[in-house]
Image 1 (cartoon, helix red, strand yellow):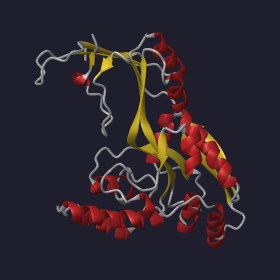
Image 2 (cartoon, one colour; image 1 turned 90 degrees about the vertical axis):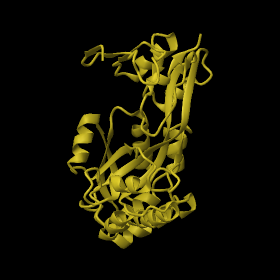
Image 3 (tube, rainbow, N blue to C red; image 1 turned 180 degrees about the horizontal axis):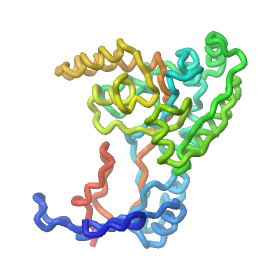
Length: 316
């Protein structure tokens, strides 16, 4: 680190003694640019070489733009609605299942993500080898089934709920609106609560929210790690406060299974149990999206969301 000015920039200088050889790029400046519209303008006019965190509509607007490359690839980012399993009415499994039947996944992918993603039909990233196949996913979009489940759960007239979402992510706001519209059709009246990222994160970790939109990225494809993040009872990141002792027992047993085939099948059993319990609303998988100048070479996506700057160079 050559310079760090909080809220403005971080300047990194290449290490000439790096074990894989001195990096081609000698200096990298990370600029703090809060507004997406500003990042969009700066990548278009050449002020910056890489733009993070543009929303899908902005990415779409840059496809084919001269001098730019809009990158979007299938990723491990899972968009979810966290239901607090200890708070009414989400302490009722039937209600949680109803929320999943009423989730308009296809509309969310096409509208909020403008096609840059997939309906999430699993409980870990679908790109991971041990994920259950899409045909195992039990929740097709079915408002009649959702309404039946609410009646069975004791909510024939639905209920009111507040959905918190990240103020800094445009796709989350659009997703919230689509969910609000769909849930209204089964009597669930949603009030959208736009919340700063830091506040939302703090409240999620404190398990204070009944219904909140979030994204998660299991960094490793190992199935035991992936299911343990949200669905293991003692996990710090068990945002929904989900607790199924049998699932916990199987997760603990899975840690010691070394045979790859047996390990995969064991964790698929766990995943099917989790999907039946519906501790969260399984929404969509968003593509990894970034825009770079077309002379930037070696920029690649990875499940860690790390920027391996030692691999980056500029075309001559």
